[in-house]
Image (cartoon, rainbow, N blue to C red; front, side):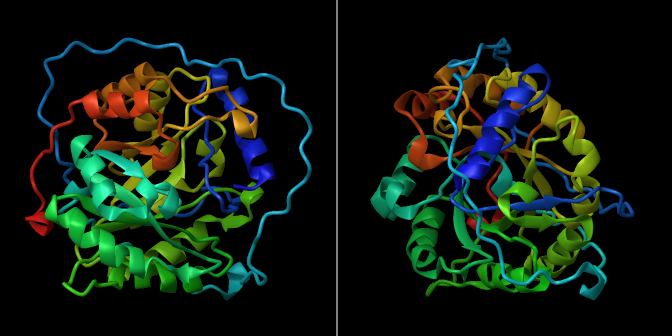
Length: 367
C-alpha cells in the first residue's frame, strides 16, 4: 500500500473512534473516486443464506482495543498512487446489463476464512502448508489475490497448485482482484479470465470478489462504472458467488458510496470492518445492520498492525478477534474472514482457531 493511502486509513481510524469502524483495506495497490449512490435501485432475488447451527454459549461482551489512542504520526513524504493512463468517460460506457438472479449455492462464503496477499509471505508459498494451517484453524475458505488493472489475471500458476490441494480438504478458494474501473469493460475481461480459469484436473475458483475502494487510492468507483463492471463479470459466475468487497458503511459512506446500486449485481457484500480504536463488536454490528437489507453479508475483520500507517499501535488482541467473530455470527453474517494471513500473530491465530463456527453443510461443488 502506498504511503498516502496508509495515511488516509489511519486518519479514518481516528475519526471513526466515536461512531464507526476503520475503513482502509491494507494492500499494496492504489484505489479511487467513490461517486454518489444515486443510481436507480434494482432488486435481485434473495439468496438463502446458509445458517450456522445456533450457539448455546453466552455472548462475549465488549472489549477495549489495545494500542489506543494512536500516537502522533510524523510527516510523511507524498506518494502518487499508480493509476491507469486512460480514463474511459462514463458517457462512452455501455448500459449496465440487468442484474442476474443470485446463485443458490453460497456455502463457499460461510464460516471462517483468511485473506492472502503476497504468496511468498504466506507460509512461504507452500500450498500444502497453507491448506494444513487452514484446516487446523477450522477455516472454510481462502481469499486469494488473482489480478488487478495493472497486470490483469496473473495467478494461474499459483491456482494450479492451490486449488486441488484446497479442494481435497473441502476448502473453498475465492479469488479477489483490484479493478480500478477506469475501463470497466477491460477490468471485467481479466476478472472473467479468473473465473473461467481451469486447472489441469478441472479445478476452478469457488467464487470471485472485486475490491472496490476510493478516490484517494487511484480508482474511480461510481455507481455506473461499478454496475457495468459487475454486470459483465456476472456472465462468468456459472453458479458461483460474485462478491463486492466494500468499505464498511460509516455515516459518511452510506451517503457517498454506491452500496445500493451494486447490491443487486452481487451475491453478497463483504465490508472491510477494520475497527481501529472502535469496539470490534460495535463495528461488526453497524456493518451488518446497514448492509443486510441489501444483500447477504460476509464481514472482513482486522488482523494487522495499523501503526505503520499512523493508526493504533500493535495488532488486535485475541479478545478482539473472538469478540468480532462472536458478534458477526450472532448477528447473522454468512461468515467472517480476516485481512491478512501474512500479518496474523500467534495469539490471533489461536483465537481464530478456537472460535467455533460450524459449517452449515458441504457445497455440492466441494463434495
